[in-house]
Image (cartoon, rainbow, N blue to C red; front, top):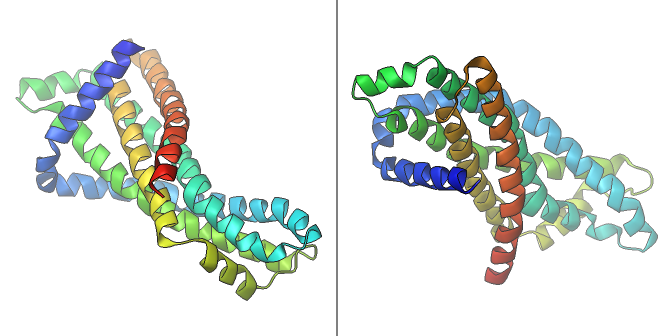
Length: 247
């Protein structure tokens, strides 16, 4: 475990040192951005729409019984932008994109394509890791913004059309506007940026260390997804505590 952590930190540091060449690889970054957005945007919107709806459906009737129906918008808005949207989108991207990164780089390692790159004096970190980490660090915060907005809309639809709540769109969004500020939205975007770095580094590391043929590729994909999700949930706690101190 400690060896893997050290290798991932080393890979992250080497990726940061190579960040200056990302402009020369903008075409590769654009291709990766298109793949990530094309594969995940629709699913992210559907997922966040129903998360916001379920959150309003669960909390709305209890708040109505206590005469607090007007605060549903603030609860849904704050929950989506500070916690649910960044964490759920990060888990989604770890499952869809992180696994694809690990499989693609792992297959290149198994079939000696990375050795061929090194033979041609091409740095695998520059060529393979930097574009993927840069693309996912842009794509995940953008997806989180879509998820936050869609989650708010899902909560508003449930409140407006559920007879147990019967809260108008205007009342819902007025309370959301009073409770949720730009700092809360930036909180979730910052979390998603940190999570994107975790997914990118962990997935690329697992791909680069793949051994054992096709079975090894499967193991690397599984490790990439599981390790990313575990690190996301652990780091989410510490990020939340740190950001609470800054408020």
